[in-house]
Amino acid sequence: MVARGRYGPKAPDRAGETVPSLGYALFATRWLQAPLYFGLVAAQAVYVYEFFGELKTLVSGVVSGRSDENMVMLTVLKLVDVVMIANLLIMVIVGGYETFVSRIGLHGHKDQPEWLSHVNSNVLKVKLAMAIVGISSIHLLQMFVSIHDTPQQELIWGTTIHMAFILSACILAYMAGPMEAKAASLEHAAPHVPPQMLLDPTHHPLQRTTPPVPGGDQALP
Image (cartoon, rainbow, N blue to C red; front, side, top):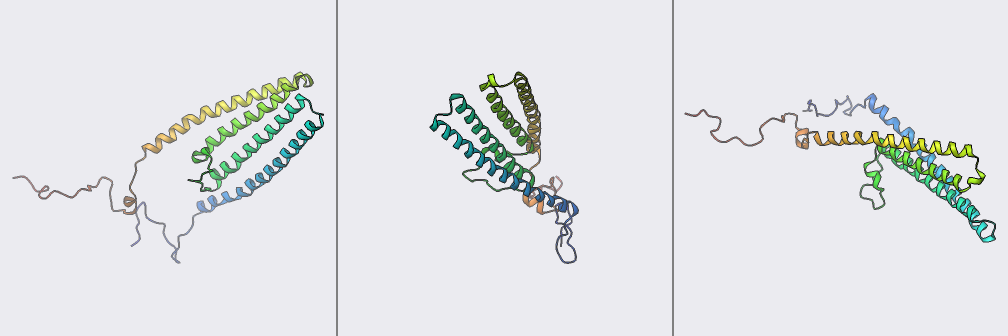
């Protein structure tokens, strides 16, 4: 007999197979995002090419003596900028795919990132905001290294935009904290139902599970 309770299976069709609902079909459309993440992988390959191009320019300039200390510092900052953008791409690719498309299944892997074990949309937004603040800091530092060649208006705008990024990251972190705490409290407050109770629709949560005492239900003399 097919269980008709709350935890029973879906009603089979005439062929004996479960009929997928419209919501399941809509949920399957999440795979349309997969090519977008592979496109970001191609963009990351472009940044790898850009990194080695800047590195070649740095080495050739130092060997030939054409680069002074400021030029070396600016080139190194460009390399750090490329690396931080590549880290941002990694967080978007791996975290976004894990959150919105499908589980990657890296649990127990020795190279699993620490943040991937508890990644969700809130954590991903905060990490992206912090990465953008780091990239903005590198650009602002490049301006201050060549401060004599940078117009004052660009310095003011760069500092203002950087402070706006910092403020946005702080607001996102402040908003994500209570939401994470509320989700954790709801998870701990949810009743833990054993699997055998889920499979047995006739079992009531308040039903007595201990065997009755002989003579316990009889009236006392």
